[in-house]
Amino acid sequence: MMNTLKLYVKSMGMLIRSHMQYTSSFIMQMLAQLVMEGGEMMAVILVVDRFGSLKQWTGGNLFFFFGMMSVSFYTTEIFGRGITGNFPSMVRSGQLDTLLIRPRTIFFQVLCSGTDPRRITCIAVGVASLIMGSAMSGVVWSLPKALALAESILMSCMLILGLFLIEAIFSIHSVKSVELVNAITYGGRSACQYPIDVYPGPLKVLFTVVAPFALTMHVPAAYILGKPLYGWPAWTAFVTPLSGAAVLAVMIVLFNRGMRFYRSTGS
Amino acid sequence: MRAYFSVFRMRLRMETQYRGAMIGGIVCQVFFGLILVALYRALYAGNPQPVPIEHVATYVWLQQSFFRMLTSTDPDLLDKIRNGNISYDLCRPVSMYWFYYVRAMAQKLMGSMMRGIPMLIFASLLPKGWGLEPPASPAGLVLALAALVPGFLCMCALANLTMGITMRTLDPRGISAMLDLLMISFSGNILPLTLFPDSWQRVLSLLPYAQLLDAPIRLYTGEYAPIEALRILSVQIVWAAILIGLGKGLWNANRRRLIVQGG
Image (cartoon, rainbow over all chains, first blue to last red; front, side, top):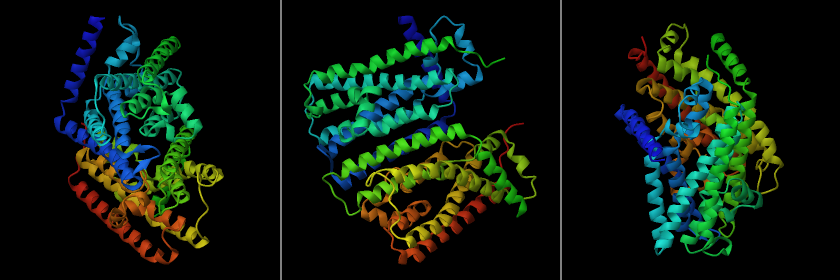
């Protein structure tokens, strides 16, 4: 286990160094990411400016939800780029074959194959939004609340990684429906940067049962903001996020099954 | 002229090839549209606004339907810039700018038609307040369609302008990516321009980004009265001319100092 972790840290270090080789390009791309996420945040600011509130949620609450989503989503993209970005092209190019002969699991090796450090600026925007949201909502921080936040972000990352694994599984079977999966991952990101209870029934079901962003993110966030979602008791804020780990576990099992059907494209 | 026409036709045909990706794209775009409309409906509950929710829903659907017109870029040209094959284009006996301009036209037109028309049909079947409303008046519809033409010319000109910059930086992910983001934000795709603060709208509606889809949509929903059409159309045409002029200038300058990659 320790050895595996060391390998992961080592490959991340190598990848980050390789990203840094073209310094000016790297900085430009980081700035582009900053503008992109800043633009997303500007949209929320403008929404708050025009509407003031969204049902029972104040403007500050909305910034907090937005911050949760961007921190979780882009942390996943930094550490899971191998899954979120590289995998389909590894299958297409036959590069995946080289992973089959090494003494580590495919999932782990794919995870080690990519990182996206440019996203750090997106996370900065997310953190700024979290701080702003928590200050505007007058959150009184306590140890349980801090723990709930940490657990929520960790579990949301696992959930997002699990959802991206669906795309990876599809690409093993060379099913060209990547855009359909995007509807769940990126659609989930867009929809769930606002609290789930403002949406109509079918969307609520989709993002609670199928892709449980509401459980990993909104239940604990609402607890931290002192406005429990659906009036659920406080302990749910610590239990429901575990669904993120469950989704990831299921997806890893399915991924390993899918790999049995992998046929190389290389020659 | 005939050369450009056949480039246009060839590119049109190519764009009709990827039908599988198209269906996935439509489903994805419809889903995003539904999420956005649901969100705006929730925001409107208890916070009524001068712009009625029906107009916002219509705005969202028209934006989503023509999304491809806004964002599609020419992957072949990007490859050529990166691997140096762009030097072959210099040998063609046609203007390089217009060659790629008509390609962009064909790609954007066909791409958005194939996705947009099914989406618009779907959106018009949705219940009132969720879907696409009929136009405010017959005149509004005619003028909106008329305004789409200069808007479309602006879009293709902007695409070529970004490409011109990429020819210099060789990397589409830096400045060019930022320009695209500006376009997505200020063309009303992330948030309808009608919901921006009123003081911003006065400035934003004069920027080139508002000429692309925002101006035609507002004519369609009746936000702009038909009487104003002449003023709006002239702003659009002026911008189209400026953007094409700028783009052509940049491409001509690039010709003189073109960086050819590879060896």
